[in-house]
Amino acid sequence: MGGCHSYASTSGSVREADTSSKAEEFCDIIGYKLKNNNTRAAPSLEEKPYLMQDYVSERIAEIDVRTLTELPEGFDKAEWMASHTVAFFKHINLFSSALSEFCTSGTCPAAVGPGDVTYCWTDEQGKKVKCSAPLYTDFTMSYIQELLGDEEVFPTKVGSPFPKGFEFLLQRIFLYLFHALAHLYWAHFRDVVRLDMHPHLNTLFVHFITFCREFQLLESSDTGPLEDLISTLCQYHRT
Image (tube, rainbow, N blue to C red; front, side, top):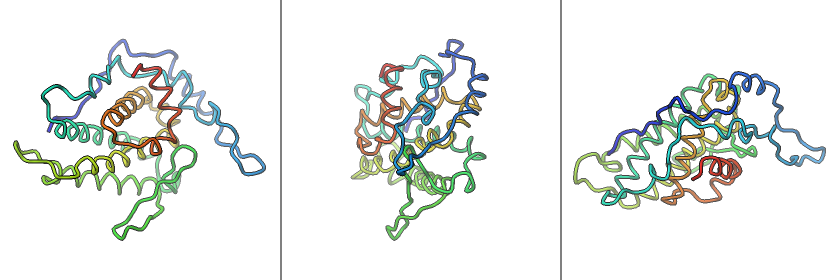
């Protein structure tokens, strides 16, 4: 299978404001507020800071994600999808590891995404288990890594066939990867900005969503909690 795709930074990276001043600005952003009737107020940029123009418009370089995504002529589809799966896993796992000091059982007692959607792990008995975000991340990443290392699922020898139902298995993998990205945007975007990693995260997310749409790996119901971000990023990055 192909190697991990990398997004190289350039001196012409898209930047529209000084990141240090924006990081300070983040410290004053308030969290969600509830109305007296326990229904949520209409979402605002303060509640979803990842939608703010100064942040959502940034990426690390001018990258044509459509070209990176489309299946090259004469290339095996399963092989193309497998190589991208490995690459996305490595990038997303790296992001999660970089933010692990902020994502603890104390700060994140549940794996939560936009709109306070809670992601649960399904154990071997098929029972849904609520767990902390770092534990959920560990479960899902370990599960994916085990599959990637299984020659019967992700063959690396020339001529070895991919298993039946391979694309259905990829759908599960990409759903777990989406949950990891959703949690980073929802619970740790302040930390991402402080580390000046938001251009990288935006670039990765746009490529990830474009690939999922190209090969129908996620349902609209799966990506719904971040649909506002997806629409905004796609407008800025012309995908």
